[in-house]
Amino acid sequence: MKVLLPLDRSAESEQVIPLMVAEAPGDAEFTLLRVIRPEPTRVYEDAIVIGPGTVAFGSGIEEAEIDQSLAYLSSVVRRYEVLPSGTRCEAHIASSSSRGIVEFAQSEGMDLIAMYVRERTGLAGLFKGRTAKNVVRTSKVEVRTFRPASLEETDSPPMADQQGGAGLAACQLFRTLTSQQRDSIWAAGETENVTQDQVLAKEGTLGLKLYVILSGEAQLSAPSAVGHIPVRVAKPGDTFPLASLLGADALITTAKAMTPMKVLSIPTADLIKICADDAEIGAVVFREAAKVFADRYSDTLRHLARAVEREADPGEKRWPPAD
Image (cartoon, rainbow, N blue to C red; front, top):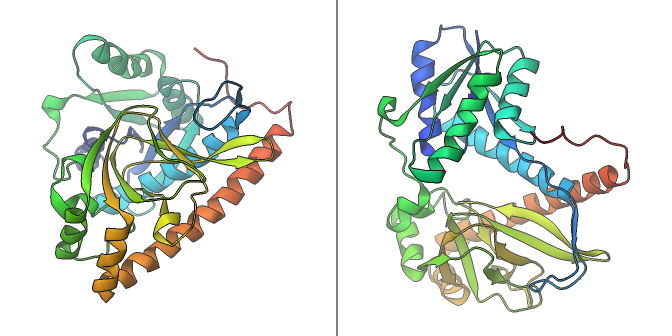
């Protein structure tokens, strides 16, 4: 039996996992799926924040989303030990979530789709419920839906709901520190609510604060010969701008909120002092910062190479037509 579990990064959608594992036969095969919406390439002639002539390669954003989605799904597999070894993690680009789920399930020969149905009032309920309704209506594969009343309470609240240093446990920069060490770093910062489109860091300026994303997303972009291009999408657990922590004179990227966000804002000078006063914290933080830098540099080069290849082939089919 092949079971498809579409996830939307919410704790509720993840709660379907133990329920289905308990009910499925022992030889069942599970696949976790994230559907990614396609992004067209755009040129913004009137961009205010990062200057006119801004170029945003849609393919670059898509590639970054795929990598981040696979990283998220892999973390889910590690957290839910009930999942059998060999559980697959997949990302699929489609013009809508429902279409992507149905396409993937049929192309991969799935026997069952198990998914969470978000119940909300007003328009939010209309749009969230539509995805599951469209999957049930169009899928040739059996679909089973779970509503909040049938789900168990989660043991892992979102980062934004965690208090004190516990909110840093999912952050790569601080995750290997002790709870007491994370508490000291949390105490040095201040939580801030960020509005959509707000700029948190700007290229060419001094980086006076380090931001840890607790909820929401930000897009980081960098200048190029053809204008600004997106470097990556930062999500909960990510930190930026690391260049300020490592002593850079000026930032090399601009960070802009894509959604409303909640962040922990830590003055760079205060964090550096904590690292200097406690050699153990300093060694961990700067070791992890070096790893993050290396990973991001490698990812950036790969994304840019893929974007150039895809943009150079105008005949390439990048996604199916919209619903």
